[in-house]
Every structure is written in structure tokens, then in C-alpha cells.
Image 1 (cartoon, rainbow, N blue to C red):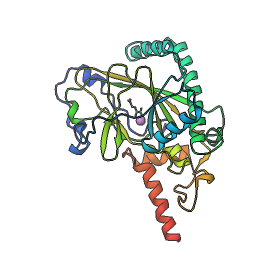
Image 2 (cartoon, rainbow, N blue to C red):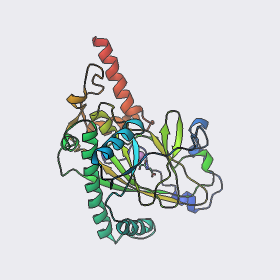
Image 3 (cartoon, rainbow, N blue to C red):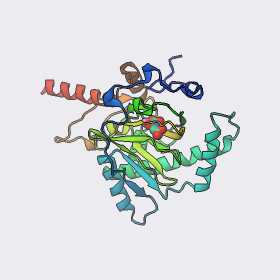
Image 4 (cartoon, rainbow, N blue to C red):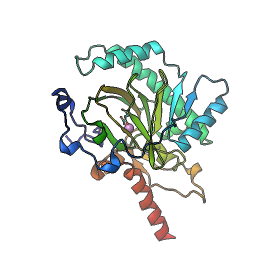
Length: 304
Ligand code: OGA
Ligand code: NI
């Protein structure tokens, strides 16, 4: 079945390759020079850290919307998900690839809490756009939208400088809330023409804007390209929670955010249609949402 749930980047099962103890990676995994992890790094930077436990809610909203405008990424600390639950979840998920998964309750509880956190962030993001707090959630199709958890496993790689664990992409959905590995870094975020390696704070979640919120906000909030590098010494795990809109309602720029200065950049499209569109384009960094915008821009120009 050509499932709509499929990820735009084909998931490659390299675990057995890694386990077999190879010392050189097959040619097809070797990236062109420009895409290699050693090229274009920007050191001394990190994505902004937002304290959700701060007393001044307006200040928090200001910081968060600033981060979404400038980086499309931020970390949240004091987020209300207990360190104990995070610890148990990490334990369970580390075993995920080696054991049959029995400990469903922990994951279930974790999923519920992350949906709650996602809902709260959506409220702050709405306010940061000058909208009523329920606005984005409504635009996503209401309260009981589905979130999807995915465990990413990056095995050790003998030649980490030649390849990537996950190629550059932007997330197609709404919001991504990522629990990164607690020991091994690897996520890199595009900053202009360079890459910034995220240094996660302890027990923080890494949050990023996906294409659907870039579209809704008419590009006020940016869905930024990111990728994952691997290393030869340690495997790496991450747990991603994708907080997405309902798949069958049209998502287009919010009318309040369309002005003469910032004309509409996107034609409304359902998340289902968008995923099909991406599938046919293949994973190409941010070309998906950008080619939509440029086509739109082209047709606006033609019509004026
Ligand atoms: C993703 C992703 C980053 C990571 O799953 O879309 O970008 O650190 N993951 O695993
Ligand atoms: Ni991603």
C-alpha cells in the first residue's frame, strides 16, 4: 500500500550493515562534498532555550515567537513533563530495537503528556502571531488531532564524515517535539548557509516548526532545514513526536496574516495532498514548501 503515513525520506535499514562491522561505507551512502558533515559548520551557536516555568507569560510568548521567526527551532525547559517519566521513557526506548516492546504504558503516558505540551506551545505560538490562543489549534482541525511518535535509531558508522544519518529536510507536519539522545549529539540546524549543532539541555525537548505552520503563518514562523550526523563510536537515538493537523482540512495562510506587504504565499492544501506532493518531489531539503511559495509568487506576478 502506498501509505500516506510514510516518511518522505525512505528509511534505510543500515543497522545490519553497521552490526556486520564494515570499515568502509558502500558508495551509495557517500554524500556529495557540499552535503558532508564537515562542510559549512558554524560553531559557538546554539538554538534558543525557552523556560516555560517563567513567571511572565507574555515574555515567554515573545521569546518563543522570536525563536520561531529567527531560527524555526528552540528548546523548552521547565516544560511540566516529569524528569522521572522522561527517564523511564528513555529506558524503554533504548531497548526498543533490541527487545520486543512490552512496556506500553510508559510510552502511552509519554504520548499523552507530549500532546498536552504540544497544545500549550500551539497556544503560545498563536499569541505570538497576535491571534487568539486557540487559533492555530482550530486551524489544525480542533482538539483531538493525532500525534505520532517515531523512534529514530542511528547506528555507528565507520566513515561518519562522508555521510549523514538523516539528510537535510524540513518536517512536513505541524510541530515536532524531539527528545534527543542524552549522550550523543547529532542534530544540526541550518542557519543561513551553515550548520549549527544543537547542544541539548538536560531533559529539554527540542521543538521545531514544520511546513504546515510555516504555511499557516504565511512564513512568519519558519520551518527550517535540519539533518543528523552520525559518528563511529556511539549509536544515537531520538524520539520524535509529530504534532500534525488533521489530514483532510485545507491549510493555507491565516487571513489576518495576509497584508499588502506580505501577500499570500501559499494556496490552501490538505496535509494529505501535501504529503503526496512531497512524495513525488522526493526529499530535497526545503524545496517542497519553497517551490510551493515560488510557484505562487510566480502566478501572483503573472496576474498583476
Ligand atoms: C526527524 C528529525 C532529528 C533527530 O525525525 O524528522 O529531524 O535528532 N530527527 O533524530
Ligand atoms: Ni526532522
